[in-house]
Length: 231
Image 1 (cartoon, one colour):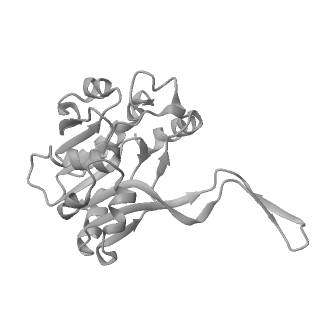
Image 2 (cartoon, helix red, strand yellow):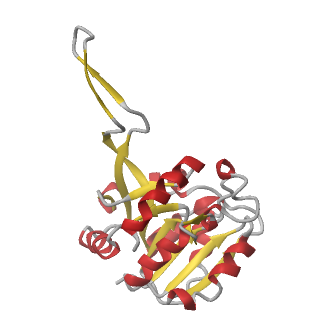
Image 3 (tube, helix red, strand yellow):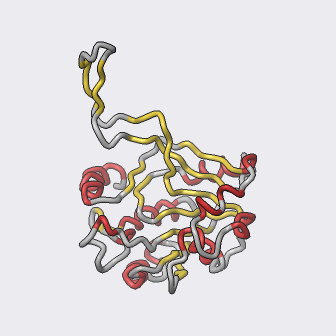
C-alpha cells in the first residue's frame, strides 16, 4: 500500500472570503472541522503514514491545526514555499521532503471534499503499470435542464443532472518517475502531463462522492451532506 501522500494546501480561496482572510482554503471549517481533515482521516484509514503539506499562504494556521499529525494518526510535515511555485513546483518540492522510501505517492488538492476508495485507486494504478493516474468524477450540471421536443414543446425539467463528461477530481497517484518531469515553477497539468507516454497515463473513474468547495454556496450545500457521509 502507498505509505506517503502530498496535500496541496496553499490555496488563497479568494471566492470564499472573508472565511479565508486568516487561513488557507483547505483550513475553512466544514461541520466544525477543516475541509482538509476529512481527507487526512481517509488517508490514515487507508494506511498512509506520512503526509507532506505543500503550503504557502497563511501556512501558520495549517501548522497550528495539524501540528505533528499525531492526533490524526499520521506523521505530518510541511513544505513551505517562500514564493508560490505553482502546483507542479509545489509537488516537486514536497517530494523532496518525503522521508519514507517511496516508489509511488498519493497527491491531492486539499480543498475538495470526497470519499474515494484509496486502496482500489492504488490497485488500479499498479495493474496498469501507470506513471500517473488521475481520478475523474462525473460532471454534474450546476443548473437545472429543460427538456423539449423538436417542436419546442416543453417535456419536463431535470434538476442539476449528471452530464456525459468526466472532470479531474484533483486526486492522483504518481510514480517516482514523474519527479524529473515536474517543473520547478509551474503547473503539472500543463507542463508535465503532456510529456507522459499515453501507455503509462490513466484515468480512474469514480462515482463515489466528490464536491469541489469553491464558493460559500458549495460550503453550505456540503454542510448538509457531511453528517451522512462522514459519521
